[in-house]
Amino acid sequence: MDYYKQYAKKSGFGVMIRRTDKGDDETVRYVTLGCARGGKARNRTLNVARPRPTGKTECKAKINALKVDGKFRMTTVHNIHNHGLSPNKSRFFRCNREVSDSVKRVLDINDMAGIRMNKSFGSLVVGAGGFENLPFLEKDCRNYIDNARHLRLGKGGAEALREYFCRMQYKNPGFFALIDLDDDGRLRNVFWADPRSRAAYQYFGDVVTFDTTYLINRYGMPFAPFVGVNHHGQSILLGAGLISSEDTETFVWLFQTWLQCMDGIAPKAIITDQDRAMKNAIAIVFPESRHRLCLWHILKKVPEKLSSYASYKSVMKNALMKCVYDTQTVDEFEKCWDHFITSYKLHENAFKFIH
Image (cartoon, rainbow, N blue to C red):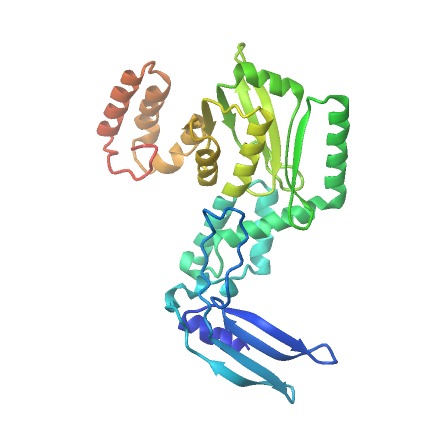
């Protein structure tokens, strides 16, 4: 069967197992392999107006193979597809993507060390000499880590957390908590907010910061706090979550849960880092809120992007800090920024926060 899979990869179509029959000894004696675009798509969404896109075309291409004297022999070959073939994209098909054990170990270590997936995947790309040399996608790495975090958490930890939330809600009905489970009933994400946080949001909820880089717990789940500032200039917690994945779907769940907790009142502005999934989720859940990027995260990347310039340490860094910290009005900043860009010829710099 490996031969047919290699043939499919070279030709440009994916393969899936359509049917298997086992003999009395529980070994496979008959198998049908078909094009991955065969069959009809199953509608897994309740939104009829916006159904999920599908690659299914009811393609009939397939082979049947029967085991005779310990070897499989093809009995049927139907090799005509009703769609175009894509040899250049074969490595992206699900049947051809595989995360090796050695890569899984790297991902596990990086995850427990708090290294975000985009950085972890980027290091794998560099190590392999380019995207084209990796037999998997970033999505596959995220799926693996998502599942690994579930396994680390285990039944005991999830049950203890549920019991704790039940006790807190019994003591104070104003305590809000919601647990998100996967299809197997395992804890995936969790959010909670005490009465003090909910009350504080009514007074200090105009501008909120959200960041998942503060802390990673021992299960590898990022701590995701919503933070505001009170009238004394002090940081105040406005709710928090533990999440198993940092993708758009997870952030949408967390933001919607937080919004529900805060009686549907969205903040006027929300400050985050430059995470793309976070940005997408904010556009979905908080379409009317202003989304701004955290200055600390932006400035953290400056040495990485500008240190190649000879004058960075001597004068450029100080000139940049002057623009950021010494200007008081928008006009003042824009004039200073314009002068900074022109003086150091940064017009062609591809890094978006610079230009």
